[in-house]
Length: 232
Image (cartoon, rainbow, N blue to C red):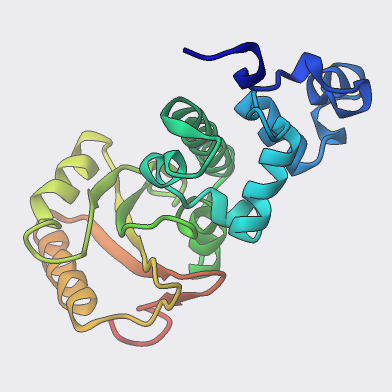
């Protein structure tokens, strides 16, 4: 049974200048540091550490917010002072941020070049710890209609099948598609499997009359377009 001394420190128990919630209400979220925003999500510290110190320690341990966003709930929950409930809150908040960035980009997106695909998908896929194979479904004027995730996991023929991709394309009345997936290693160099799967998708698209315009591989700040490289 916890004693009073064992109770974690609450935000309201911190000095006024260390209360991120009050600062957010007074000045807006833009005025807060990454640590202060994390502290609001974490809510409490430990008996020996304020929530601000916990947030700052998490950022320092992971060398910044970008790497924190890559942690799974299981990995976060093993960090002292966080636990399962806080880990789930952090992961959910990070995912909402990624989705919002993708949604805002998609609403104004027209795909004219591999750089357009990079700009659209880099924020969403750059820090994923597993491979995500995404289809950009395009209108006749190359506006993005939808961005369904076709598979998650190591890219291979058993996970990525033309029927899954083109079912989505047909459901959205897409005129063309662009393929995108990430390499969690950060190196976007295409593998033999990447090339084989792309060629298989192109062949299936030709039969259905839905062009596969490109396959872009996202790394850590870098990308490779199979079309640009002359591979397809």
